[in-house]
Every structure is written in structure tokens, then in C-alpha cells.
Amino acid sequence: ISRLGRSSKDLLNIIDTLTDKRVTLISHKEKIDTDTPTGKFMLTVFAALSQLEREQLKQRQREGIEIAKAQGKYTGRKPIEIDWMRFGQLYGEWKSKSITGRDFMWRMGLSANTFYRRVREYEATHGIAEPTSA
Image (cartoon, rainbow, N blue to C red; front, side, top):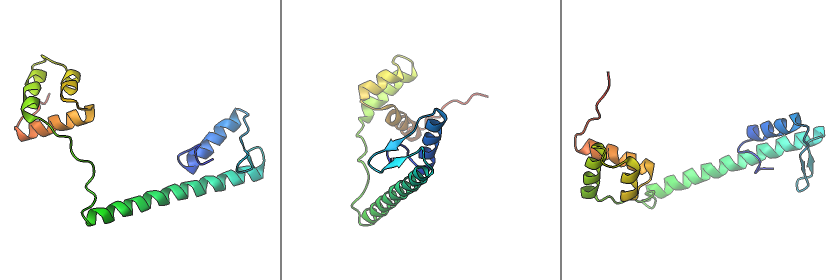
């Protein structure tokens, strides 16, 4: 049951959609039949418990990360190393439209998010301002 939706609200919306389409959900594991009032009640209780468990897990994870950060053990993912000389060359080609952004990303081995973040970083460190349209 907990795998059907991300929250109890999602799960209940899914069950409502199924009910509107005249589909009955029966869970043999939890012994729930959504065709009965008791089954609907039990489904709601299980959904709420699943959401509570998920939220508690997230909270414990956040607390663990904060403790690890305070102890200097957690620093997140290491930044992707960039060859800034090559980046600068490709940046010039990209801005002059000799290559596409996709080609630039491929040559540098970067995802789109990393590429655009590094472009902003490069432009900021080199004092390059993006022209604004009036």
C-alpha cells in the first residue's frame, strides 16, 4: 500500500480515481478491500502511517547529516574538476556560435545543469555580463 503514493493524500486520490472507474483495490498482504467502509478506513490509516514513517526517516537523515557536518565528516559530493583553459576556449567557440551548447557539454563531459552553473561561474569570474534586452 505504501508504494502506491508518495503521501496519504496521493494514495487517497489514486483510490478515488480507481473508485470512479469502478475498480476495487484489494490488498491481500494487509487484508484491505476498498469496496468496504472498514477497508477504506484501514487504507487511510495505513497511508497515514506510511507517510509518518517516511517523514520520520527524512528527519533522522537530516539530523544525521547536520551532526556529520558539525563533525566535519560530511561535505557533500566533490565538485567536478574543470579544465578552465579548455573551458575558456570552448566558451569562446560557443559564444561565437561555432559550436552548440550540446557539443560544448559533450566535449567537457558535463551535464546540462553543471554546464550552465559553470558558465555562470566562468562569466562571473571573468566579468562577462549577459546583454539584457530592453
